[in-house]
Each structure stands twice: as structure tokens, then as C-alpha cells.
Image 1 (cartoon, rainbow, N blue to C red):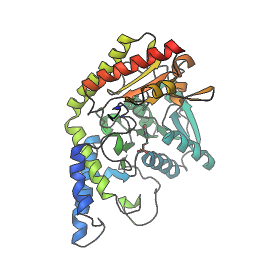
Image 2: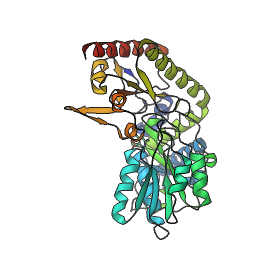
Image 3: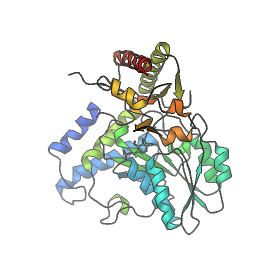
Image 4: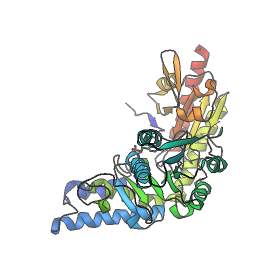
Length: 381
Ligand SMILES: Cc1ncc(COP(=O)(O)O)c(C=O)c1O
């Protein structure tokens, strides 16, 4: 059986062959503990520090400002809880948006039990946060602003540099979740002006279960995991050397091939969008038309239920739904809800996300499959 065409790269990515090659020795023969003082510890220790330099190179910080984590979720937890608890004597107010990943929203919600209060700023119809709304939400006790760099469902890229400038002027810590942007667009912690930035390895062709957190040198977070002294005492536990090596290699590749990859992603994404729009009526783009990840196209199909469409195309195309239908109720994603996408569009939303391995032939085939399925479902509705 031929596998379905994979158009869900925002969900996760396959391993890059160069990432596999870099990891192979650490799977097969180099097994030492980086903390060991003997010979076996030397190469793993050097490999972890090389990977730290590779990640730092991609986000433009010092290697000492990179902590390895288990992924985007842990990085967000560490950044938000670590900053909030370290700064609680100063204040207990956090600002975020209504449209973040649950790995941010749930952390803020959890902190309410410790007396932290969160303001959720709105996004506009294209999924953009207005820096003016952030400015209005700032209070004397605001200690942290956390806004994602790019949204996972619709791809809208936020004005992080402008928001971070507001934060910095008031001595507020600024965090951004860059799980979706890193590797797809340039990410530079200096020009963004952020203090904390989350990285998720499996979104950039490294394995699942590895990530990183940039922590500006001037900032000290509350320790995330107690135990021995790994990761500057912030995150105890023997390092995941194999996957750290993979993440480092993935970051080096992303930096090296950024321009070529961006051009490819944009070409594939636009070919898909234009192909579908040319074949079907009543199709609408969710998200910002320009300030958007080069690989992401969230399309709303009128008179369609997303889950039904996914079932119809499922053997041929893998994408993801923006709404889930249970019995006779439709649960629209919190992202589309925050953007106030009308139900008749939101319920028929699919996210397509292309990747480095996507080919024009795959896109053309996916266009035919989706167009045929939408026409069939509309005809039988
Ligand atoms: C924006 C965003 N943040 C965080 C995460 C969580 O990352 P991880 O799966 O590495 O925990 C994801 C993954 O979907 C994401 O899209």
C-alpha cells in the first residue's frame, strides 16, 4: 500500500538523514555518561557541548544560554513556571494570548493556584496580537509576557520584537514559544529581544522528546528538576546525549539551508493553496496572508465538516482538522475560536503543513484528492 501524502509537518517531522547519521554512533557505540570523569565520558560530553553551540548558532545566543529539555512542552513549563516563581516577590501578573499552545495556556492556568493572575489578550481575525493590547494589559505587578512566535494551526507570525520592546522598557521578562518557527524562518533572540525562547526538536527534523530553552544570561529561573547538577543545576538528570546530538545537527542544517528551505516551503504551500482555490468555490484562508509561516496553510471549506473530510481523504493525504465533531456538536479549536472564525467556516477547517521533503508531485496529487473529496461531500450533504 502506498502511504498517504504527509502534509502535517507542523504535527511532527521525519528525521533528516543527516540527523540520523550524526546520531548513529551514539546509538551504536558511544554510550558513556557525559558526567563521567573517565575516558568514556569525554566524547559524549564534547558532543553535548557541540550541540549546545549548534543550537546557539541557530538562535544567535551564547552556548551557555541554552538548556536542553525534553521538548517544547517542558521548555514552556520551565520558562513560565521558572520565571514566575523566581520573580514572585516582584509581582504575580502574567500576560499571554488566548491563542497559545496548551503548553502555555495550561501552565498559566496551573499557576493560578499559587496566586498568579493571567491576562489573555485577544487576537484579530488574522490571528495577530496587537502590541497596543499588550501595552494596555501591563500592570505594575506584571512580571512575564509570553506570546508565541508563530501559531501552530494557522501559522501567523507575531510582532515579537515590538512586544519584547514594551516588556524590556518596563523590566518585564519576555518569553516566546518558537516551537513552530524555528527552522522555518530566521529566529534571532537578539533582534527579537526576548529573554526566554522555547525550542521543540521534532518540529525541525530532530527526534521527538528533545528540546531546548534559551535563557538570557541575566535571568535566573527557579530550578526545574531537582537532583544532580546537570544543565547548570537547572535540570537534573543524565543528558539525552543521542537526541541532543540530533537536535544540534538539525539546528546546524536549518541555519545552513534556511534560504533554500524557505523558498521550497513557500513554493509548495502556495502551489497547494492555489491548486485547491482554482478547483473549489467557497474556500477561505485562516491566518495572516503574509505574516505567516512559509509552510502553513489553514483552509476553511464551507459546507464541510472537517472530520468527515479527513476520513474521506485519509488513505491518500494526512492533514489535521481545526475542529472536531462529536455526535452532533462541533468543537472548534481554541485558535479558530480566538480568531472568531464563523462556525460555518471553522467547522470545515483543515491545516495543511508542507515540509522539506514535500514534492510538487505530492502537492498536485493532494490537490486532486482534496478537491474530489470536498466536491463529493458537498454533493451528498
Ligand atoms: C506552538 C507549540 N508549542 C509547543 C508544542 C509542544 O512541543 P512538544 O511536542 O515538543 O512538547 C507544540 C507542539 O505541537 C507547538 O506546536
